[in-house]
Amino acid sequence: MERYDVVIAGAGVAGASLAYFLSGTDLKVLLVDMRPFSRAGDKPCGDALGKHHFDELGVEYPKGEELTGVVKGVDVYSPSEKTRYRVMGEGFQIDRVKFTQRFIKAAADRGVEYWERSYALEPILGENRVEGLKVRRGGKVEEVRAALVVDATGYPRVIANKLPDEWPITDRLKPEDAIVAYREVRRLKEPVEEPEFLRIFISKAKAPGGYWWFFPYSLREGLVNVGLGVQHGVGNPRPKDLLYKYVLTRKEFEGSTIVEAGGAAAPTRRPVNTLVWNGVAVVGDAAYAVNPIHGGGKGSAMITSWCLAKALKTASRGDVFTAEDLWSANLCFLQHYGIKQASLDFFRIFLQQLSDDDLEYGMSRKIIRETDLNTVSMKGDLELSVVDKAMRLLAGIGRPSFLLRLRAVAKFMNRAKDLYSKYPETPEGIHEWVKEVAKLYSEFRAKVLK
Ligand SMILES: Cc1cc2nc3c(=O)[nH]c(=O)nc-3n(C[C@H](O)[C@H](O)[C@H](O)COP(=O)(O)OP(=O)(O)OC[C@H]3O[C@@H](n4cnc5c(N)ncnc54)[C@H](O)[C@@H]3O)c2cc1C
Image (cartoon, rainbow, N blue to C red; front, top):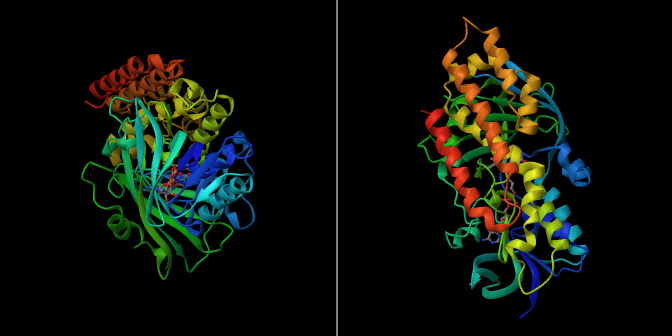
């Protein structure tokens, strides 16, 4: 039986980009996915990706068939749709299959072995470490031995969810820390106005704990991605029913036809406690690397993979890549994304509790302005000064309890940033640090969500 340095389970954007970042090195890498190559990366998605991710990671922009739209910014609408925030920011609409195939092809050309139609079944566990992966391929179960098994299977976490509870990488997802969404790609009868602006509609009544979206593909006239996501695990109605009830009955969809349809789930919480443990790692959705506010996860999936690849390239070699060997992947990810993500998680939980009335009030009074919203989303910073200024301006006509709660949220966001900036330098400190995180959440729930 052949032995690999790294076996990657899942060839979505996280696994495929990891294979690409590791290709061309002397590491012997195997990439497996249950889907055929023709459906690589085909998870239902809004297909939007920020340009800054490509700049940060040195990855070539999508072009040709991969590129289905150019994005200049996002319009965010209040529940009544009377207030619109225009947040500028460049990005792309992509053909997610062609985009993922790009990574797989480039990785395979540079020596990575790729098995399509191959199911990752379970990790092979050894003494306090993972030693390989069981894979079903062509009707047979193979035991693939590797120094590192990477779970890139996305939301189902096929490997990580089968690890012992006491390993910090196992860190199970609570249902309420996820969204379930349904989306259709539709051809409209009329061309879309300003197709280079994506549109997000916030409404607790229509999309409880989430939002609905209208993302045009600006390079494919009349084609739009329209979907709706709701918070999971709290008894919300099915997103497809809500989309058909509140959204597809709108005038702009009259006479439109369905090109594609499908639903999926995504995590929307803080990052996983650790990306690596002994002989095992997680990337992408399996590492919960998704923006808690807008649910975008493709760019951050690439960041987890880029950081893990960096750690692997410099790690010393043995039978197993240990948590200690690869710990720098955590520090890299937190610095590039995870600290902001942790801070945004507090904002997300707060937003999910607000009524449409509060959302309307907050947006129509511009308590957080467009520019501040951009800072919140790009950096996870909600400056106390922004809230304090709103409190002064709205003195007498404001909603003191709402503003005080917002002020408290801003403080917790700062504390989260501080705690995640003090992430342990080595695996030894992880259990104590995880307890500190749990304490911060308990305090937040007691003080802000009471
Ligand atoms: C409705 C919706 C809309 C979204 N819109 C956006 C958006 O506009 N922009 C954005 O950036 N993000 C968006 N996201 C999030 C984004 O889709 C994910 O964050 C991203 O796809 C994560 O990539 P991944 O590679 O980690 O997981 P996935 O894309 O889920 O890939 C996992 C791979 O693992 C494979 N796999 C699973 N189980 C096994 C197994 N047992 N054996 C072998 N292979 C297996 C699958 O076939 C798949 O190829 C959206 C999510 C949803 C649900």
